[in-house]
Length: 236
Ligand SMILES: *Cc1c(COP(=O)(O)O)cnc(C)c1O
Image (cartoon, rainbow, N blue to C red):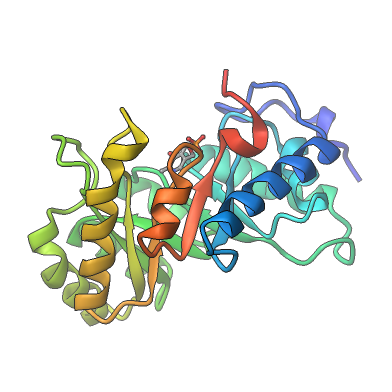
């Protein structure tokens, strides 16, 4: 079996490796932060972008079950390397979440790998996913930042996009949002808006909260947080 070091470094993943014991300690820290706000039930998605595949393997050994990736090429490369590195009986198969901005022409490449698509923000993308991964589980990404960002549909367009995605045969499980990054306290209104939109459309899952604002997201009804630097340290 080839070892990780025999492969060329995948795109973006050029940062240093992080060892399992350190990730386990930090994972515990994140769990404590969730417990401190009464939400130990929130799912933790480990976002390893820029870190190499052996760090992902270390995360799985540390007890991580959900992996988040932001770049299509990096996802494909890491998925292959992680699959080789882990004996199938060592840890359960991880769940792979695609959380980054997604171009339509990248969908086919990752369709066989993604378990939950977090960043579906337009009908053309939903159609492409339905074509290459019929019946896929998705979240509709909503722009909750109030900033003029590229990613996320407008809050008042959620119903239409959810209905259209359902018509395409996709399983719409919930909504995803990225809060204003400047100041964690400023994130709360956006999180509250997203939870309210999910409830209004009868959707159970809400993907919101990152390393800096996960308590606020959890308090506002997040069901899954996407955590990078709090588990792996700063990105290079
Ligand atoms: C990078 C990223 C995260 C993790 O960010 P941290 O601040 O390092 O926790 C979460 N969500 C998305 C969409 C990201 O791109």
